[in-house]
Length: 160
Image: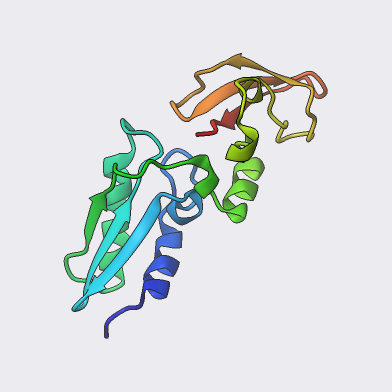
């Protein structure tokens, strides 16, 4: 039986981001295309950063999930032609980021000045009296912030 794109997309919900295990690659917006041709499945992904250190792990996890579903020789292609943006994160993904303790990035429409990088909503108390302490967090896609309301440090997923 040939799977549908909807079925493959549903299966890929099981593939979690290696750095944020509560967030699927689908909700992160990394899965950009699914092609099914004569029973062959090709998944296209766009990493959040060109030098993403988790890229090979993501590809392997996608292949593992598809193979477990009976897909013979699935293929994962990396697309660098159209860059990933933080606007590709789904609402479900934004909620997962917040629950995980990461402030979701603001929509690109708000990203007109660099000042938006300095202010992030605190995922713990929801406060907006925050300041960026370091542009570089624990990974390339995060920055470190401090909340003046609850006095807690947190990371924000950077807007791109």
